[in-house]
Image (cartoon, rainbow, N blue to C red; front, side):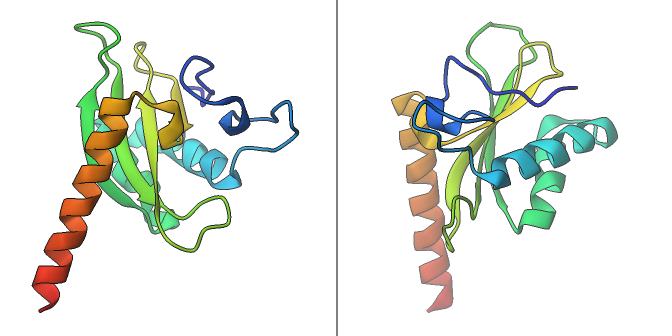
Length: 136
């Protein structure tokens, strides 16, 4: 298994490396990607591996969907939240399992299709509203 950037979906500044401007990917993406890679070896499903990889990052698993690139492929995408890039609050990110079922990559919301990003943001909004209601 190999954690790699997806050059088609990730803005240059968020690849595992540097951009033209010289800014690096959040180190948390690399950490999460490496832990996810190890978790895939010990967990039967992608969602379970993502959940396990989020534990040391105090992250939150939101949902998992099949990748729409190829019908019947092994690709999956999971929406998660954890603190990265200097933020103190949890931010949205996406963990992607490649169509081969082996390669993983971590992406910012900017690198995802509008409908997926919008769905994930709405999902977070609903969770926050439920937490507010439960607190009262």
